[in-house]
Amino acid sequence: MRTRISRDEALSFILTYIIVEKSTAFQLDQLSLFSLTNLASQAAQKLSDEEGLIPHEVIEEIVAPFLNDIQFKQST
Image 1 (cartoon, rainbow, N blue to C red):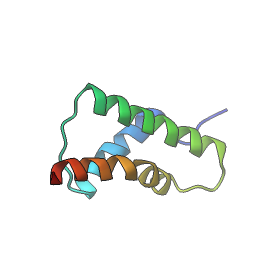
Image 2 (cartoon, rainbow, N blue to C red):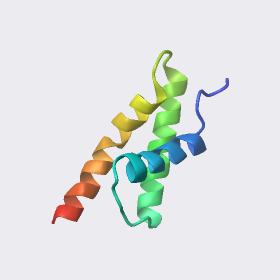
Image 3 (tube, helix red, strand yellow):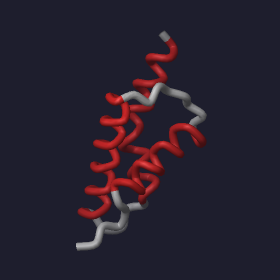
């Protein structure tokens, strides 16, 4: 079965979304890269499992908790 979006494409979109669209800088270390890769896998899986979803909306929804965590850490 062909996936609508690969994990690598989802990861690329996630990084672009966080850095460019949300103007959020963060430390890309092993832990954050692992977390982002897992989020990308979740997004790719969800898009493969369900028809009619809009990729950028799914990715933005999945990344929201990660973004909130980054913003919370930066504000403290």
